[in-house]
Image (cartoon, rainbow, N blue to C red):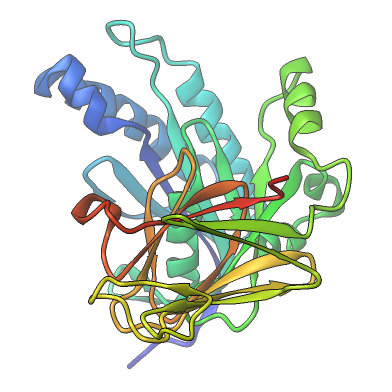
Length: 298
Protein backbone atom coordinates (compact mmCIF):
# COMPACT_ATOMS: atom_id res chain seq x y z
CA UNK A 1 0.00 0.00 0.00
CA UNK A 2 1.29 3.44 -0.93
CA UNK A 3 2.22 5.57 2.05
CA UNK A 4 0.55 8.95 2.67
CA UNK A 5 2.81 11.87 1.73
CA UNK A 6 4.23 13.92 4.58
CA UNK A 7 6.47 16.94 4.71
CA UNK A 8 10.17 16.09 4.57
CA UNK A 9 13.38 17.96 3.93
CA UNK A 10 15.06 16.15 1.02
CA UNK A 11 18.76 16.97 0.64
CA UNK A 12 21.41 16.06 -1.92
CA UNK A 13 25.15 16.58 -1.38
CA UNK A 14 27.75 15.74 -3.97
CA UNK A 15 31.47 16.28 -4.38
CA UNK A 16 32.11 19.24 -6.66
CA UNK A 17 34.41 18.67 -9.61
CA UNK A 18 34.86 14.95 -8.95
CA UNK A 19 35.62 14.26 -12.63
CA UNK A 20 38.56 16.65 -12.50
CA UNK A 21 39.66 15.05 -9.24
CA UNK A 22 39.95 11.66 -10.93
CA UNK A 23 41.80 13.17 -13.88
CA UNK A 24 44.28 15.00 -11.69
CA UNK A 25 44.78 12.58 -8.80
CA UNK A 26 44.21 9.22 -10.41
CA UNK A 27 41.50 6.73 -9.54
CA UNK A 28 42.78 5.45 -6.20
CA UNK A 29 43.63 8.79 -4.59
CA UNK A 30 40.53 10.52 -5.98
CA UNK A 31 38.30 7.73 -4.66
CA UNK A 32 39.80 8.12 -1.19
CA UNK A 33 39.23 11.88 -1.34
CA UNK A 34 35.59 11.45 -2.38
CA UNK A 35 35.03 8.88 0.37
CA UNK A 36 36.46 11.27 2.97
CA UNK A 37 33.95 13.93 1.93
CA UNK A 38 31.00 11.54 1.88
CA UNK A 39 31.96 10.03 5.25
CA UNK A 40 31.79 13.47 6.80
CA UNK A 41 28.44 14.13 5.15
CA UNK A 42 27.16 10.77 6.41
CA UNK A 43 28.17 11.58 9.99
CA UNK A 44 26.44 14.97 9.80
CA UNK A 45 23.19 13.38 8.61
CA UNK A 46 23.11 11.16 11.69
CA UNK A 47 23.97 14.09 13.97
CA UNK A 48 20.83 15.95 12.88
CA UNK A 49 18.48 12.95 13.13
CA UNK A 50 18.44 12.48 9.38
CA UNK A 51 18.50 9.31 7.30
CA UNK A 52 20.73 8.54 4.34
CA UNK A 53 18.46 7.19 1.61
CA UNK A 54 21.12 6.27 -0.92
CA UNK A 55 24.68 6.92 -2.03
CA UNK A 56 25.34 6.95 -5.77
CA UNK A 57 28.92 7.54 -6.81
CA UNK A 58 29.94 10.91 -5.36
CA UNK A 59 26.44 11.91 -4.17
CA UNK A 60 24.42 11.30 -1.01
CA UNK A 61 20.64 11.68 -0.75
CA UNK A 62 19.27 12.20 2.75
CA UNK A 63 16.02 13.24 4.42
CA UNK A 64 15.23 15.16 7.59
CA UNK A 65 11.95 15.63 9.41
CA UNK A 66 12.16 19.43 9.48
CA UNK A 67 13.50 22.23 7.28
CA UNK A 68 15.49 23.48 10.28
CA UNK A 69 17.36 20.18 10.67
CA UNK A 70 18.04 20.10 6.94
CA UNK A 71 19.46 23.61 6.88
CA UNK A 72 21.65 23.10 9.93
CA UNK A 73 22.92 19.81 8.55
CA UNK A 74 23.73 21.44 5.19
CA UNK A 75 25.77 24.15 6.92
CA UNK A 76 27.60 21.62 9.08
CA UNK A 77 28.40 19.49 6.00
CA UNK A 78 29.97 22.45 4.26
CA UNK A 79 32.01 23.40 7.32
CA UNK A 80 33.33 19.88 7.88
CA UNK A 81 34.40 19.48 4.25
CA UNK A 82 35.89 22.98 4.29
CA UNK A 83 38.04 21.88 7.23
CA UNK A 84 39.56 19.01 5.23
CA UNK A 85 43.15 19.64 4.08
CA UNK A 86 43.85 19.79 0.32
CA UNK A 87 44.65 16.49 -1.39
CA UNK A 88 47.79 16.82 -3.53
CA UNK A 89 47.08 20.53 -3.72
CA UNK A 90 43.40 20.10 -4.62
CA UNK A 91 40.90 21.73 -2.26
CA UNK A 92 37.86 19.52 -1.69
CA UNK A 93 34.34 20.96 -1.83
CA UNK A 94 30.74 19.81 -1.94
CA UNK A 95 27.60 21.37 -3.31
CA UNK A 96 24.33 20.98 -1.46
CA UNK A 97 20.73 21.45 -2.51
CA UNK A 98 17.53 20.76 -0.60
CA UNK A 99 13.79 21.36 -0.58
CA UNK A 100 11.06 20.98 2.05
CA UNK A 101 7.66 19.64 1.05
CA UNK A 102 5.41 16.57 0.74
CA UNK A 103 7.14 13.31 -0.16
CA UNK A 104 6.38 9.60 0.00
CA UNK A 105 8.62 7.18 1.89
CA UNK A 106 8.36 3.64 0.63
CA UNK A 107 10.72 0.63 0.63
CA UNK A 108 13.57 2.68 2.12
CA UNK A 109 13.31 5.25 -0.68
CA UNK A 110 11.67 8.65 -1.10
CA UNK A 111 9.55 9.76 -4.05
CA UNK A 112 7.66 12.79 -5.26
CA UNK A 113 7.94 16.32 -6.55
CA UNK A 114 9.98 17.42 -3.52
CA UNK A 115 12.77 15.04 -4.55
CA UNK A 116 12.83 16.47 -8.08
CA UNK A 117 12.95 20.05 -6.83
CA UNK A 118 15.76 19.23 -4.37
CA UNK A 119 17.77 17.65 -7.17
CA UNK A 120 17.27 20.76 -9.32
CA UNK A 121 18.52 22.96 -6.48
CA UNK A 122 21.65 20.82 -6.22
CA UNK A 123 22.27 21.18 -9.94
CA UNK A 124 22.18 24.97 -9.51
CA UNK A 125 24.71 24.96 -6.64
CA UNK A 126 28.44 25.43 -7.06
CA UNK A 127 31.19 23.97 -4.90
CA UNK A 128 30.97 25.34 -1.37
CA UNK A 129 27.41 26.54 -1.90
CA UNK A 130 24.00 25.60 -0.44
CA UNK A 131 20.96 26.25 -2.64
CA UNK A 132 17.37 25.77 -1.53
CA UNK A 133 13.87 27.05 -2.21
CA UNK A 134 11.83 29.89 -0.81
CA UNK A 135 9.37 27.32 0.54
CA UNK A 136 12.14 25.67 2.57
CA UNK A 137 13.27 29.06 3.91
CA UNK A 138 9.68 30.02 4.81
CA UNK A 139 9.44 26.86 6.94
CA UNK A 140 12.34 28.03 9.16
CA UNK A 141 12.21 30.02 12.41
CA UNK A 142 12.59 33.74 11.77
CA UNK A 143 16.17 33.90 13.08
CA UNK A 144 17.38 31.21 10.69
CA UNK A 145 15.62 32.81 7.72
CA UNK A 146 17.99 35.73 8.09
CA UNK A 147 20.89 33.46 7.10
CA UNK A 148 19.68 33.25 3.51
CA UNK A 149 19.09 35.42 0.49
CA UNK A 150 16.84 35.04 -2.53
CA UNK A 151 18.89 34.97 -5.73
CA UNK A 152 16.58 33.92 -8.57
CA UNK A 153 13.34 32.37 -9.68
CA UNK A 154 13.01 29.46 -12.09
CA UNK A 155 10.27 27.44 -13.70
CA UNK A 156 10.28 23.71 -12.94
CA UNK A 157 8.25 21.15 -14.84
CA UNK A 158 5.10 20.22 -12.94
CA UNK A 159 5.12 23.42 -10.83
CA UNK A 160 2.56 26.03 -11.85
CA UNK A 161 4.34 28.86 -10.07
CA UNK A 162 7.91 30.02 -10.37
CA UNK A 163 10.16 28.46 -7.72
CA UNK A 164 12.09 30.96 -5.61
CA UNK A 165 15.76 30.01 -5.45
CA UNK A 166 17.67 30.96 -2.29
CA UNK A 167 21.23 30.62 -1.07
CA UNK A 168 21.98 29.65 2.53
CA UNK A 169 24.78 31.82 3.91
CA UNK A 170 26.71 29.32 5.97
CA UNK A 171 30.01 31.18 6.22
CA UNK A 172 30.69 34.06 8.57
CA UNK A 173 33.06 36.98 8.35
CA UNK A 174 33.92 39.96 6.17
CA UNK A 175 34.26 37.93 2.96
CA UNK A 176 30.60 36.94 3.11
CA UNK A 177 29.48 40.49 3.79
CA UNK A 178 31.39 41.77 0.77
CA UNK A 179 30.05 38.98 -1.42
CA UNK A 180 26.45 39.64 -0.43
CA UNK A 181 26.79 43.36 -1.00
CA UNK A 182 28.26 42.86 -4.45
CA UNK A 183 25.55 40.46 -5.62
CA UNK A 184 22.44 41.99 -4.09
CA UNK A 185 20.82 44.35 -6.63
CA UNK A 186 20.97 48.01 -5.70
CA UNK A 187 18.14 48.86 -8.10
CA UNK A 188 15.33 47.08 -9.92
CA UNK A 189 16.61 44.93 -12.79
CA UNK A 190 16.61 46.61 -16.22
CA UNK A 191 13.62 45.81 -18.41
CA UNK A 192 15.62 45.14 -21.56
CA UNK A 193 17.10 42.12 -23.29
CA UNK A 194 19.13 41.91 -26.51
CA UNK A 195 18.67 38.91 -28.77
CA UNK A 196 21.32 38.20 -31.44
CA UNK A 197 20.92 35.56 -34.16
CA UNK A 198 23.36 35.64 -37.04
CA UNK A 199 23.40 39.18 -38.39
CA UNK A 200 20.07 40.06 -36.80
CA UNK A 201 19.74 41.80 -33.44
CA UNK A 202 16.53 42.83 -31.72
CA UNK A 203 15.90 44.50 -28.37
CA UNK A 204 12.92 43.72 -26.18
CA UNK A 205 11.71 46.19 -23.58
CA UNK A 206 8.49 47.49 -22.08
CA UNK A 207 7.45 48.94 -25.46
CA UNK A 208 8.31 45.73 -27.36
CA UNK A 209 7.82 42.98 -24.76
CA UNK A 210 7.68 39.75 -26.81
CA UNK A 211 9.47 37.88 -29.58
CA UNK A 212 8.54 34.64 -31.35
CA UNK A 213 11.31 32.17 -32.22
CA UNK A 214 10.94 29.35 -34.73
CA UNK A 215 11.04 28.09 -38.31
CA UNK A 216 7.85 29.93 -39.22
CA UNK A 217 8.79 32.81 -41.52
CA UNK A 218 6.48 35.08 -39.52
CA UNK A 219 8.65 34.63 -36.41
CA UNK A 220 10.57 37.61 -35.05
CA UNK A 221 13.68 35.41 -35.10
CA UNK A 222 13.56 32.79 -37.87
CA UNK A 223 15.43 29.56 -37.05
CA UNK A 224 16.52 27.57 -40.12
CA UNK A 225 17.54 24.37 -38.34
CA UNK A 226 15.12 21.54 -39.27
CA UNK A 227 15.27 20.27 -35.68
CA UNK A 228 13.54 23.46 -34.55
CA UNK A 229 9.74 23.61 -34.47
CA UNK A 230 7.77 26.10 -36.56
CA UNK A 231 6.60 27.74 -33.34
CA UNK A 232 9.56 26.78 -31.19
CA UNK A 233 9.73 29.26 -28.31
CA UNK A 234 9.01 32.79 -27.27
CA UNK A 235 10.60 35.45 -25.08
CA UNK A 236 8.19 37.61 -23.13
CA UNK A 237 8.38 40.31 -20.48
CA UNK A 238 6.56 39.21 -17.34
CA UNK A 239 6.56 41.73 -14.50
CA UNK A 240 10.24 42.61 -14.11
CA UNK A 241 11.71 39.49 -15.77
CA UNK A 242 12.10 38.18 -19.29
CA UNK A 243 10.89 34.60 -19.66
CA UNK A 244 12.02 32.08 -22.27
CA UNK A 245 9.08 29.73 -22.91
CA UNK A 246 9.60 26.46 -24.81
CA UNK A 247 6.76 25.35 -27.13
CA UNK A 248 8.74 22.83 -29.19
CA UNK A 249 8.93 19.14 -29.96
CA UNK A 250 12.69 18.66 -29.46
CA UNK A 251 13.34 21.11 -26.64
CA UNK A 252 15.20 24.37 -26.14
CA UNK A 253 18.78 24.14 -24.84
CA UNK A 254 19.88 27.03 -22.62
CA UNK A 255 23.28 27.99 -21.26
CA UNK A 256 23.82 30.86 -18.84
CA UNK A 257 27.37 32.19 -18.97
CA UNK A 258 29.65 30.13 -16.73
CA UNK A 259 27.01 27.47 -16.02
CA UNK A 260 26.07 24.04 -17.37
CA UNK A 261 23.64 23.70 -20.25
CA UNK A 262 20.10 22.49 -19.49
CA UNK A 263 17.08 21.73 -21.63
CA UNK A 264 13.53 23.09 -21.47
CA UNK A 265 10.75 20.82 -22.68
CA UNK A 266 7.41 22.58 -22.50
CA UNK A 267 8.91 24.56 -19.62
CA UNK A 268 10.13 28.10 -19.06
CA UNK A 269 12.96 29.91 -17.32
CA UNK A 270 14.01 33.46 -16.48
CA UNK A 271 16.68 34.97 -18.70
CA UNK A 272 19.46 36.53 -16.62
CA UNK A 273 22.83 38.04 -17.34
CA UNK A 274 23.90 36.60 -20.70
CA UNK A 275 24.07 33.27 -22.45
CA UNK A 276 22.98 31.29 -25.50
CA UNK A 277 20.04 29.25 -26.75
CA UNK A 278 20.02 26.31 -29.19
CA UNK A 279 16.90 24.94 -30.83
CA UNK A 280 16.20 21.21 -30.82
CA UNK A 281 19.74 20.10 -29.94
CA UNK A 282 22.61 20.68 -27.54
CA UNK A 283 25.22 23.32 -28.34
CA UNK A 284 27.99 20.71 -28.53
CA UNK A 285 26.08 18.90 -31.30
CA UNK A 286 25.91 21.92 -33.63
CA UNK A 287 27.33 25.38 -33.02
CA UNK A 288 26.30 26.95 -36.33
CA UNK A 289 22.93 28.45 -35.38
CA UNK A 290 22.72 29.98 -31.92
CA UNK A 291 20.65 32.72 -30.33
CA UNK A 292 22.68 34.84 -27.90
CA UNK A 293 20.96 36.92 -25.24
CA UNK A 294 22.09 39.69 -22.91
CA UNK A 295 19.79 41.03 -20.22
CA UNK A 296 20.19 44.73 -19.51
CA UNK A 297 22.53 45.31 -22.47
CA UNK A 298 22.98 48.90 -23.50
